Image 1: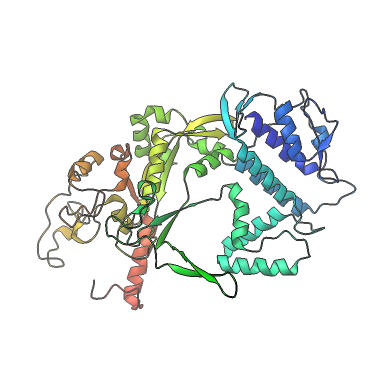
Image 2: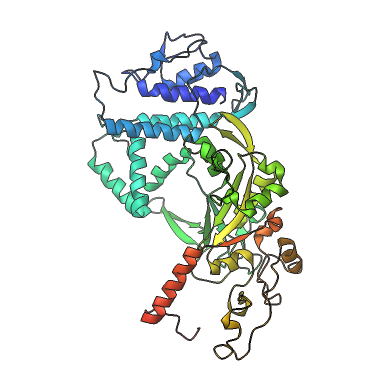
Length: 511
């Protein structure tokens, strides 16, 4: 745990016990708990003047003191929710440790943008000062009253409101309308935002972010990285933009101007993987669970967990340096029925940002703080397999799973092999084809690229983008079929055909 993070954790703890003026005593080496200041000023003093040595039990800042005082009665439910908000901030900024002395080594850059700290193990790490600014901003939101004498503060109210929105599927517009109504109904001086966008900006510091990436309207390419400034698709020539909308800006009675605003034809909203993996190790409730496969799993030879599977063990044997660290992450990519552009067979580039992140997580790793042991480490990650239904298997693997290209082979003694009358009039005696390894599949795909081919390489439709991962071809089991999802599809199609439900029956011309 770095010095700065421990200082922030102290401020977070002490902020639960502010005096009437919203201040706390300053435990720096100069003030020695003799002056009261606002929490952010105390934080600056702790960073610049060092924390008071020997002040381990924070008795002057609420440690050992009850959660309520005779002068103020606090609603237990609201207090618990406020505590959850403080826990949320702790998880977001990685501040979990025992109540120990926070003294440690520290170097501050002259420009004030970065702080280098030394923890108890002598390890150096960097902490952006902008994170501290965001922390205090959110802490202020957590303590700010929704309106004068309101029992609920601003941030807890907005978090609960946003939770209700997600649970009930409210649209962004409906939430904005509700916020406008509440703004009018509440007392003057309330701090409620008026629109959903304003509310969303408050949550950005919690890490709930995503990136907008423009895409070709036909799904050919993403206007990303090297193609970020292109205006047209290199493949199909389609414009990046819809028809420009015209915004009229009045400048007076006798003068007006028009301004064109480009609207992207298609937008991919990408939720980055790296910060979410870091968050799992920064959260006190999940950090230890990330290593359960090594520290908590029962190893009795039975199939209890994916760690007992041959695919998991095969990866460990191929990459012993990866398996040696239990903090390294093994991922499964679940994409059951995932189609971002509707029920279409056109190609798209949804997986490109994910693939780039996965390559970086394998080759370089990502510096992460494990709060369960209060240490930094380099986290690496690997996609062990994909999980999908049968139609999506074709999209993920690049191998056609339809018609005659699907695997039609039964066991050698199956009755269907000799049932010529019910099928095409011939008996099937050929054995099932040998299963291809990743390297053998790559050799068959040497003459085609990532894009879809024109049928010259049947049954291959294209080269899967996951072959860009350096370990993908060596995995024992790259794709899994979700049996439950497949059974559901078969049941729905069978019932729809028998009952003749419109839109669900497969007894049609295409069949």
